[in-house]
Length: 557
Image (cartoon, rainbow, N blue to C red; front, side, top):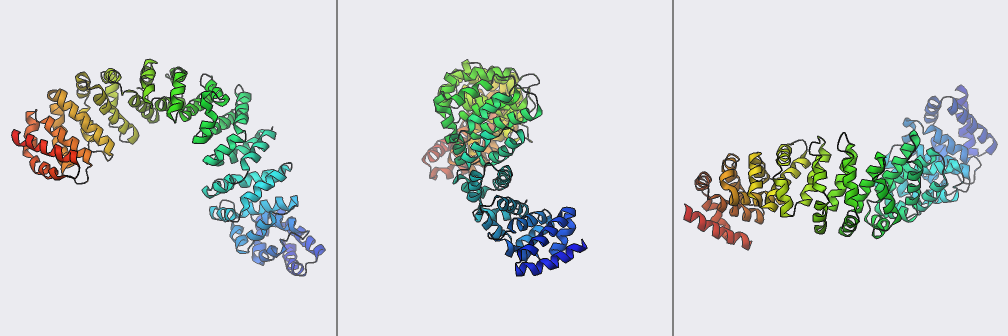
């Protein structure tokens, strides 16, 4: 290390004189010292002030350029050296060197930039602004036969692709084409893994998704799945997972999804269908998620239901009822929920036994599964008959009432409330209302009327108005103890309440007059004052309902 101090002094002199031979000797000594003890040697380099000199040696013409870049790459392995490298102005000349034709210079330059900018989003963003992405993509195309350079480009892409600002620049290059070309050539697991690590963040961008599909990535992924599906070797299992996950990610883009669906006739869609009945959990999961993604528009949903997808999904669910795989349950339920959105599909799905298949998961203790189960049922019960059948199912209603109190899981709580209300609104059935009253569900519907979401408030008020119209006597005590009348007074008095909330609250007030105790509460709270003010409301329906309600209150007082 003492020699190093001499070398650094000598380097200062020769760097100015530019005598290539003695300069090369000094640089080699410095590289050797870094190889022996990188940290100690780097500290001496920092103390010597030589970094600024190195910047001046980074010229395309010099024969020492690759060695200088190598020294910078070694020094920048130490975190404490990265800011000094930036302060010494090394980034700009290094970026310029990415245009070099010399493969060794390119390799060492890439390493140097990678190490200086390691783990620093701000420095990586600076590189992106300096235009390194198109340059690196071009390099990958030119030097795809140089394994070390290819790897350097992939590592750089992996780091830069994590930044949102990189995606647009990547999308304007032919990165998709280059990566797919490279991928097809790889046989080693590690090399493919490396390309996967770049593809995953890039495929989050919709434009790049489409480019990857057009470049033929999907065919590569399907081939991997076919090769690895029966293997239990760790590498193969991991590659199968990565390939099928990436496939699902490509389907998240609307254009790429539609291109692969090809009206339900596409090879890709057919292959994905064959994953669902497979015995491999990872493929079952990817298959169900892919169907959920294909089911993002009505045309696809109608086509898939007409072609028997529901039976495949319910069979899959049946295989996962006892000690099933939660992620597969969640994915299959997501697909069914999406398929149930078009009106024409609902009756077909009901007659295919979807509710029976879904109800088997009522005992699940997993909130994500509970959430999708509730969403699927809510999508299916627009038909009166289905709503009545489910609304009289005491096990289901009891579970809904329990989940209405799942304070830790807002999604499950919200969906349970909405399903309770939907059972009443769509069935308009006295029996359903009685079942819900007996299970203690009324108080949750009253609470739902105070939700921060107008759509939920409205659904609750309409359900409560039906209860008051059809089974007021049965529900009277529960409505009273849930303080419904006070809540309605508050909703009407609150200027922020939406017009439809005010309208439905007044409809409900009129319906409650048939109950003696509730009628008394209405009188005690001086509703007339609040309602008469609403006669001049800007919304015509609210103003008309206010006049009707005022007359009713005046007659009944």
